[in-house]
Structures are given as C-alpha cells and as structure tokens.
Image (cartoon, rainbow, N blue to C red):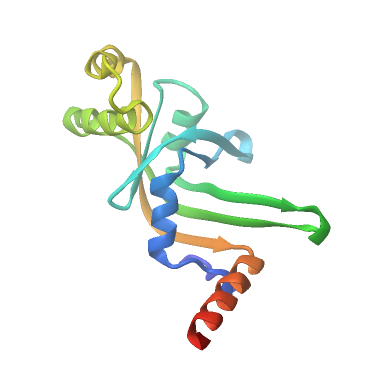
Length: 170
C-alpha cells in the first residue's frame, strides 16, 4: 500500500524514528487542500503510542481539509546541517502517513490537551487553568499512524559504518 524507501541503506530503524518524533517539537502536516492543491502547515505536536496529536482552531483550512479527506502525511526534521563544500546537507527526518481524526470524546481530548501542554510548558503554574480556559475553544486532532519511515543522509550512514568497523577491529 505504501511505497518502500528506495535508498534502503539510509533507512532509520523504527526505534530511531520514534525517538525523533518523541524529541522534536514541530513538524509539517500535509493535507488535501482546496481545489486539489496540497496544503502543508507547520505545527507543534506530541507523539504517544503510535499516534501524533495537535490542536487547532474549530474552523479553518486544516479542519476543512481533514473533514474532506482525513488521509495525511506529517514530516519532522531532526537534523539539517548544511555542508557547502560538499554540496549537500547531513539530514535526519521522519515521515508518517496516517488518518487524522478530530477527538470528540471529552476524556480523550482532555488527556491529549494535557500531554500537549506538558510537552511545551511542563511545570509551569496555571496548567490546569489554561486547559480549562481553552477546552471549548479549540479542537484536538489525532493522527493514527499507518506507515512511518525515517531517513538520514548517506554521509551519516557512512560515519556510523566507519565507527562500527573501527570498533570491531579494536
């Protein structure tokens, strides 16, 4: 159903892809937008148990797109080091494909809001008040991940291989 990555040598192990999703704080959501145009929007998110969560306004382009077609893609870039003399970048990124759902269950929505607020404002006073104040004014969206691939620059793969080879000979 999903394409295999062409450059398999650059494929990150699943646990490294998950670690990137857990660590990073923003990504780009790609949706089917208006008039057949793709719509990609950067957003803050959190990852838990094979799902990505984010919040949005109750009305707008994102919500309209999800309601029309809930198949989405989400991309997170962990590293993007430009190497001018090599005419390349040393990158690490993850792309997921899945279906987006607006959370309608109040308990699930509150749990998702709490996890999101904790990720970005952990330990800050007023966390519960902020959730209570915002609860009825925003939506929480969940992406059920169906396919995930992580990829890194070939130069990073070569560095790892070189390191592993030198460790074995030591």
